[in-house]
Amino acid sequence: MHRLLILPVLLGAVLLAGCPAEPPEAPEAVRPVKAYQIPQPGEQVTRSFPGRAKAHNEVDLAFRVAGQLIELPNELIGRQYKQGELIARLDPRDYEVKVDDTQGKLQRAQASARRAQSDYQRELNIFKEEPGATSKTAVENKLAARDAANADVRSLRASLDAAKDELGYTHMKAPFDGTITAKYVDNFQDVRAKEKIVRLLDNSKIEMVVNIPENRISDVANVRDITITFDSFPDNPVPAEVFEVGTEASLTTRTYPVTLIMSQPEGFTILAGMAGRARGLMKQVADTDTGGVQVPVGAVFTPETEDTNYVWIIDEQTGVVRKQAVVTGELAREGVQVLEGLSPGDWIATAGVYTLREGQKVSIMEAAGD
Image 1 (spheres, one colour):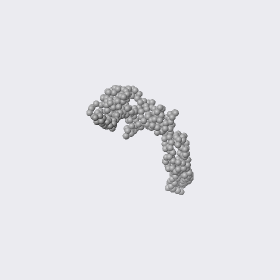
Image 2 (cartoon, rainbow, N blue to C red):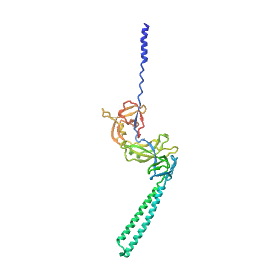
Image 3 (tube, rainbow, N blue to C red):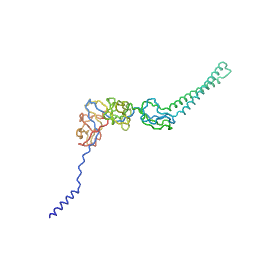
Image 4 (tube, helix red, strand yellow):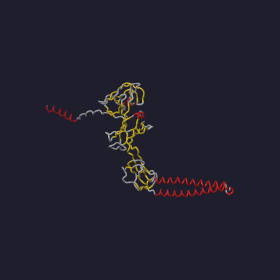
């Protein structure tokens, strides 16, 4: 009897041991979202945009004539040059011969022009003193010969200038102070005209191009205290200023290129290609007519089954989102007017608003331009 009672208990234990325990529910993933904080009226707000450093002056240098390299240092990368200093040189002999040959032709043409001038003057004098001794046609022929000889002189002078220019092009000189960062050919190599020889960068000043949305490009003139923080030197912001504002927007991103410029900082060196982020302060202008605020257009949404406009407000402490009804006004330069429903300091989601849900947990991303 005891054996019969024990058997079901053992079978149950075996079955229980063989059944895997249900895995614990995975915690809900925290979704990163782009967000915007409602500023205080008159508050100094920070705008920031990513970019990449480039040299203020950079050029791939090439000879304007073909020839054989006879002077190009082997250890060239990293070498610094002053403006006008010789970098490389081609074999000049063929171009020297061309200069000498053209010079000789010019001298012969000048001698011919002098004889033609004398012949014309003599023929003209005879015609004036003894009209029967020569004819007007003969005078005109001498004049034409003189003009042709002078034309040959002018042509050969131009050819000589061109030959001297070509001879000068066998010398490659630095167009500005800079550092060689690349060498594309070797010494004693035959090179073609306009073939890249070396790359010269001027790192004394650095540029960064940032792309500004079209609804904010007019604010560039009001931005002040611009600094650029590079990823390689996160604790060392570098002062910068606007160098150039593009006048044509990208067809794909609808952004305008704005070029910032800065001097090399002391203590570290910014190299071309380094990534960073530009930041600047801009005074927030209050909407005095309506008392409302302006938010990015992507922050406002309207559910299909409703006529009410909403935004997602993010609790900065918990990261939980909640739907907030708002009253909107007209489209404005900065986005869309919100007349009611928002307060200064509120964080609102600005992208993916139709895929969020009530109570969802999110993390605030650093949105471009905020």
